[in-house]
Image (cartoon, rainbow, N blue to C red; front, side, top):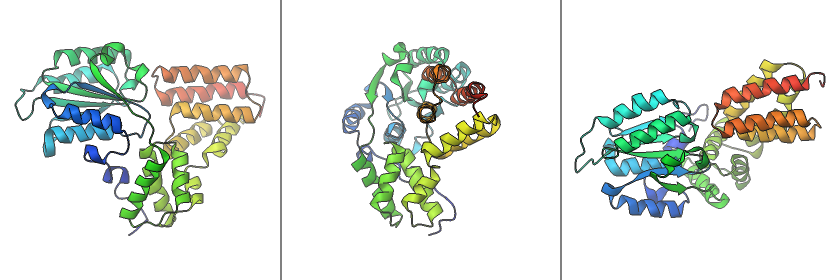
Length: 324
């Protein structure tokens, strides 16, 4: 086996294909089994919970259960964080939903809308109307991290399922099963560190495991894990703050987005890390605290993460003038 590059993403290679293969989420799986016993009466579904807990996986499992090998033909997958405006709802979702005649074998088509909490309120309102108008021909599975960002009229039209973080022992067991399948000798210390860094996000843990195996030549060590994630706290964040204090704004932005791409942390987690580092450096004051609070709130409201983080760094750079 060659470790010089990654040919197949393990997160896709080992994605569960049936309800019984899903890691944890026993209550959700049991409820979905009952729903799938009477497909004709399947409601719209709303999956909510932290990233990497199986929401998208379960949506794809349902698609396969509904349509078998033809599931792609009858399923529209969209990521609302990339396509979150009202035009996408009107053009893609509406067109997909309206041209279909139900049959006994295929009673309806399926729309899977990932990161639905990133949609604008206008787009959600348009989506709610489409869900009402085309309920005879289309079912929706909406996936979100934050249920509170989904408007009440949509929530009321869905059966809601709340997902929880994958427990340590189950996540590590799953990672071990991947190592066995790939014939990788990976110590418990390495897997523990991967889980710790991934914070219960199994998708992120699998991606990190594959990256660590790849860079280590198939003999991963804990130090390899730390190198891959850039020693997230405090090294990278500290470096970003220092660049802002030196007036190197573009370099700080580049470093931040490189860090996000490698580590997989979201924008609000970045703000927490910056907050902790500012406290350590005695740089937390009313002005910097207000900046962090403002952008944390904006992201909670669904504002575009990359734009908000860039603007936040710009404001922090201004606040740091004279402190470098």
